[in-house]
Length: 328
Image 1 (cartoon, rainbow, N blue to C red):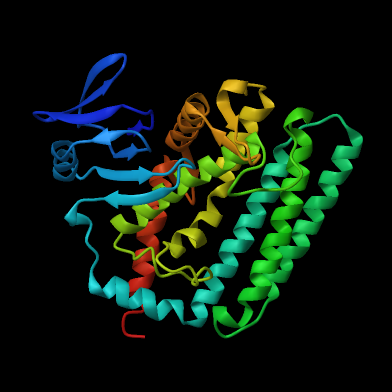
Image 2 (cartoon, rainbow, N blue to C red):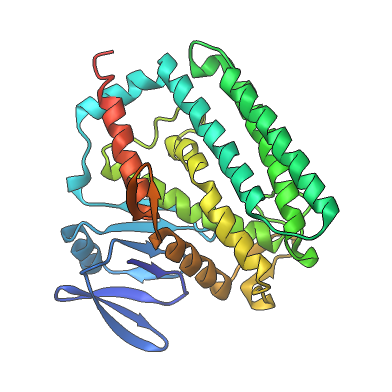
């Protein structure tokens, strides 16, 4: 279970071996058993006693901004890495195998996009034709990525980014056709979001960034050593690589919510500059919906676990891959 505190004025304290949440509605005592992480948003407070209780119980604490993206983290020293993983990670980054890995990541991302488009239902023949054409175009980009040759990632990074960007533009333009007309957007916008759907996507991706970063840290991987994303100073760039495998989870949840006509004016606010931000109700719905989806049990490569556990298993598998390159 994840505790999420993102309402102004809410506070988290300690009561012996349990947490106590205090807000306008009153106080709630929550045992540490079953809590895996604590998310603290702007305007919420946490005491040092609560922080120490979290550390003692190996519960990570994540501080987030208004977009749900992690800006700071406290974790148990038991998560410490070992030198063989970090040395191997550096060696792997500059090997030809890193290029194979990132190509596979991008190909899988495009496959996921195609799969979601195939899941969409409509009786509109024009939309059906557009979707079929888009899936075919995505297939072309997936083939291009697979056939790209180079010795290391840097040799072909610009082409990979370009093809990935084009595939994503085709994907979102097509997916946009399946949501209620009043919520359709002109383009995918990040920060700031220029519509409520992009605000929901941004918040969902922010949540996913935090979960991936936590999984990498627990596995002993340095999230600041990236493969394709390597140019952002003091940013967890490996998270930006790994998240491409899992963005589809957020896409599915957000577009499902939008298609259900659940959005109200209370979900968001529009600032004077035209940017859209999720308010408390919108954040609560997105957080709950994504966490419920991540808790669902699915089977991947013969292993049946929750999506969250699959993500953690992938991080552990990646750490073992890096260890093999320690003496490369």
